[in-house]
Image 1 (cartoon, rainbow, N blue to C red):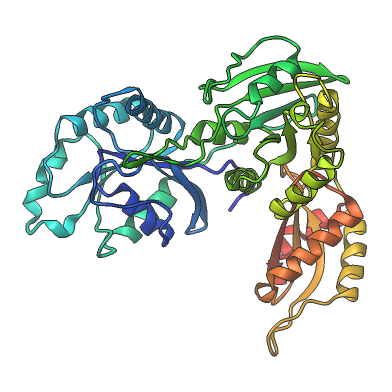
Image 2: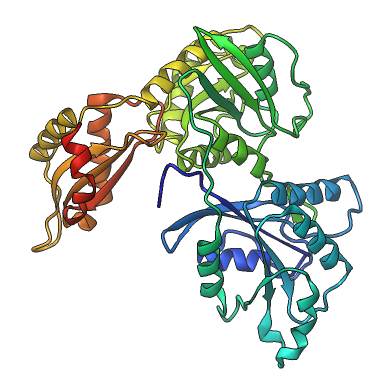
Length: 454
């Protein structure tokens, strides 16, 4: 996998109850989405990262297409259109035992108009007896079709093979030293639009106490200390909650688009709702996307007078809840009073500088020798890993390092964490994830010339 490319998005769309969630679950080999006999059960858009045949992509499960009957249902249908708009490859799922109907035709027409690579997935083939029963799907207009059964696990491998083979290669916009893109990420109504306005010192976004006001990605630019900073304000990612028989809309695709455009993400937490599991999931999304992260506790003015020791108490809770991103700076801010708003810009510049820091190969290998001498990697009998040397990937848009050695596949995850912690102690990289790739020494010749020239 080439880590310098943006991870593409595969969206699963189709009518209600055609087996989209079952297909999603089968892909991930776990029950990530709710499945039920009742039509329209999936009310949120779920996503997970999947690796197949050395290709990495996001899989997104969407609610079912149907005629909107109210504002809420309309918002779900709008979410599906967003999925099509933001996806790089689309899986259009239909039922093998149900004739191609008007809703299928309408969606098929829209998918063909989108010009996105689209696969027709004819699901539940275990319900038909003869192949002629699916001949009518030949008139869908979609070139590539696949026969699947999630209950019998039929056709799943072939479908994943084709996704990996046909997924577009997406090159992100190259980060420049003169322009930094940051995004405001978080649940609805945590103060993203207020902070957006405060950062720009003007009313660019609509600010409302009603959750979900910001539907699209608002963007603007500002100069700070000679740098151009582009700020993206996103609609919030909702917390799942039951509404009648369904699940509340959980829109993430526009947020993922903003994350992929950004070098650094500002994750906003509401000071009055500091212990929300969804905030941790969003932080994981940012980490998986390889972006820098700064955690902002918003609405600090609403809580600062309640307890003189509140800051320390909250910092301890946040450190525990976000222990998987221990490198994320923490800022307590208020858009109402302006407290620490300027500090956000200062920390953004620091994190961006750390993100693009380059370490000489000589210094890296001196560090590696010291780290492995102090604590050598353990392994199996006659399979002890040995780490010989390392290089930094100069063409990556984040801190990334290749470490060459023998028996590297036996290195335990805890030892990788040890190396990352020691690397941070020595060189920093605050606010950014670090990627360590362990490569067998027989592949080293590919990099030897570049190493010698470093």
